Each structure stands twice: as structure tokens, then as C-alpha cells.
Length: 398
Image 1 (cartoon, rainbow, N blue to C red):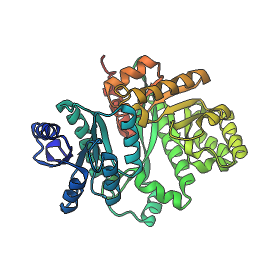
Image 2: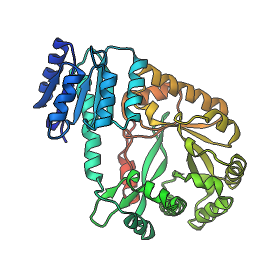
Image 3: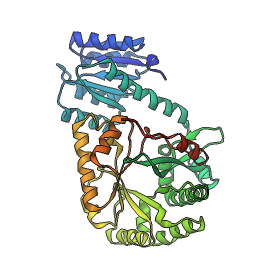
Image 4: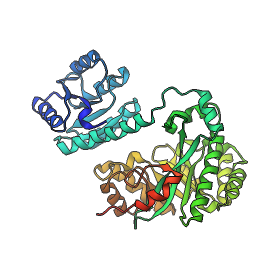
């Protein structure tokens, strides 16, 4: 969906700034733009609409119903597809409001500091255009438990691969395997639509092993073609309760002709750890067999420092929530910088997820980050398309 095709509601109590926002929308080609001077009138307008607008632009400091209360109503009544916060308030408060809105289930495009400009607005609305296109392409329709189980059994859930590059020289050094469901109708379904079904049916271990086996076969083929890449694979939380996991993973990798030392197993913070003693034993055995261990989505959990001090991790992945836009947001940059400093002191490789702009790339390079992953480098692609994709990759120019 192009920016010009979006419908946008501007909620702003200041008349001049509201008119300015409408003019900027018009300059971007938006023809379906609506306005409201306060939260209460905006809610009445939204409830009268046949369908919610694509974007609600909202100021926070408004008389009567403030923007925070208004956003809460939007979430409860499902009256907006996405929210763009526009405010002159401090960055810390804007970040808190973004987090609150996302926790309520809203898609938040950005929190833009006033004065609003055409460039800021275009960037924010453009991010919705990109994600909307992804959702439309990958929309699964109705998904049944039977269909997901059959897809897993039939090998229709396959790994796609997103590249990881060294920030110092732009060299591609690895890929992360990400699950995709290739349906018979040609649609490609993203994991958030089918992984919850597999989790409910206790099939995540089977998914992990199938993904590991398929990804290792692709790595073997790339190795033979002279394309040597580190391979990262996500493993389920239940791995930590399974004392036989290390032996099975080693067997799967060796059967594909791959060295475990070239495999990094990623575990999210939230998966660590119900049974600490058993979990540490499993992780220690995985390291003993040569696997690398990565703590994924670092910064989003609650006991990271304790885990990092106990678990033999080799890599720390900084969550995209903190990386995307960090070059323009001091609080995000501070989190990234602190995470990188911690990784250096613990002797861990650092991977920044969600790198989408040249500015973020340059910031990470300046801070000494080891590796970058994200849309700026490339989206996940099927294994057969990876060599051609990597041949086209060029390091961003400063």
C-alpha cells in the first residue's frame, strides 16, 4: 500500500499544528485525512467510521482527555490499525508511551518530536507501508491445528536465511535460519501465525530439529560451493528440560556433514530457565560438543545479568526494539552502548538485530559492535536464493 492510499486521522488540539499536519499529509498525496481537536471528539468520529483509519496521529498533551488516555481507548475498542505519536514532550516519556501502546496490542509507527516535518512524516508512514505490504503478502487467512501439524510432518515448514555481516568490513559471515511455512497455494506464512499452534501441541522440539537438519543441509551445500557461513538456529525453551538434546543436535549436525563449531544455537531470555540445574547442564553439554550459544533478544527479559554470569554464552544479540532508530534516539543508543560494553567485558560476540538505516549502521560501527543483521542488509530468503542475494550485497557508503 502506498502512502497516498492511506487514511489518516490527526488528533491535535492546537489549530495551527493540526492544519500543518493536514497540509503535510496532502503534500505526501494522502487524500483521506480527517481531523479532531481532542480525544473525546476523535473517539466519536472513529466509532462512526465504517472501518478504522490506517493511522491515527495523536498529540499527548491535550486538554480533557490526554493522548495517553486516548491511546488506551484506541486499544480497548480496536479503533486504529496503527498509531503515530507526535509530541513536544521529552524523549523518555515518548518511549514509555510507545512501550505502553505496544503492550496494549497497538502497532506504533514512531514517536515523532515536534515540529513535524514532511521528512519525518514520510519516514513514519513509509514504515507502515512496508509492514502492511508484508502482512498482506503473508496473510494466512484461517489456520487450523490440523493444517499446521500436516505442514510440519510434510516438510512444508522450511528455513529461510537472513544474512549477518561484520560491521568493520561489511563481509557476510553468517546467516540466521528463520522458519517459514510454504503453503500449497503459494503463500508464505510467517512464524507468528503457526508457532503458537505448535507450542500448544508440544511440537516445538520437532520444529527445532527439523529446522536444524534442513538448515545444516543448506550449509553443507554452500560450504561445497565455497560459501562458508556461520549458521544460527533458534531452539525451543523445552530444550533446557531435555538432557538428551545435546546428543541429538550433535547427531543431526554431523549427519549433514557440518561441524558443530560452525553452529550457533539461539535461546531467548524468556526461555531461561525453569529448572536452573538441569538447564545449565544441558547448555554446558552443548558447549562441550562445540556449539556456540547466543542469548537472543537481549534486553527484553528480567534476569539477563544473572544468566550471563552463569551460562556459557558465546554471543549476545541486542533486540531490534533497541537497535532500530537508536541513532536518532539517545535512550535507545544508551541501551545499545551499555549492551555492547557488557558483551566486550564478558568476551562475547555482539550481534545487533533490526538494522534498517545507514545511520544506525554507522552508529553501531562507531560503538564497536561486531555484527549487524536487518533489512538494510537483507530480508530472509529461501536457501536457493541466498548465494545470488549475497553476491549483490554492498557495504553501505558513509
